[in-house]
Image (cartoon, rainbow, N blue to C red):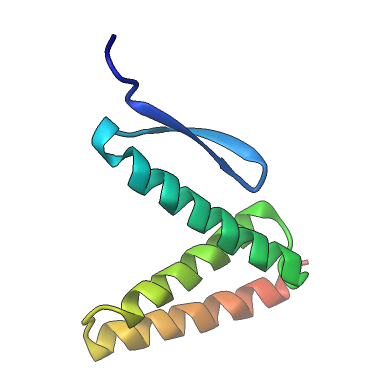
Length: 95
């Protein structure tokens, strides 16, 4: 029997089927658990509402963490900071 090329992950109580080669399953499961944890932290803070906004904030936080550990140029670092500030400002205006 051939191995499945999809993986079911659960993020913020929703299930998603994600295409995934068998050799990448463990890493994708770990990534999904990490994303779920980050989204729950944001949701539980009570400062951000709506799944889409929570996902965007989690993505920004994870991107920031990633860039902290890499050798991005200073210009890229400043761009990420500015984008984060712009998004915070926009989200603050949305009812």
